[in-house]
Amino acid sequence: MAKTHMIHEFGMGTSLRRRDYTEAAARAIRDALWHNSVSLAEAFGFEKSDMIIDVEIGVQSPDEVDTATLLDIFPYGQPSITVKPGGLDIPKPDGSGVTVIANAAIMVSFDMEAA
Image 1 (cartoon, rainbow, N blue to C red):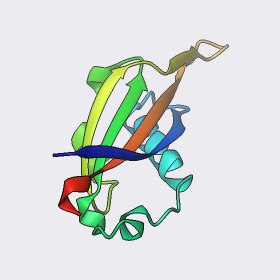
Image 2: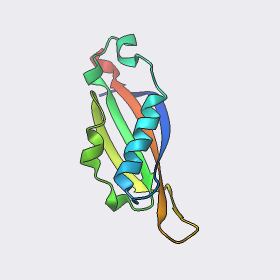
Image 3: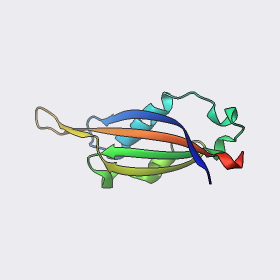
Image 4: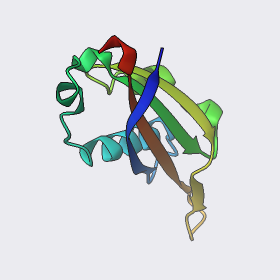
């Protein structure tokens, strides 16, 4: 397979009150997707289902992210998700909790030999 990266998008998401790493990651993915309105598959003669979507998520507690839930965000393509240490946990000034910040990087590729 000649996997060729075609586009990268980046996003940030938060969980302000519940310390929900999955929700922060989901918001980061949606933020990244909303930055992109390119009809990339059609431009190269591919179906949307041919999109190879590699997602990297950065949060302070990677083990607390439910990647199966995140896969449901993508309406087409072949998404895979990797969660790594990153993002930020910001303690609230009054000590009542933590705000979670997640970062997402989405890379879309195609198998260019298939064209």
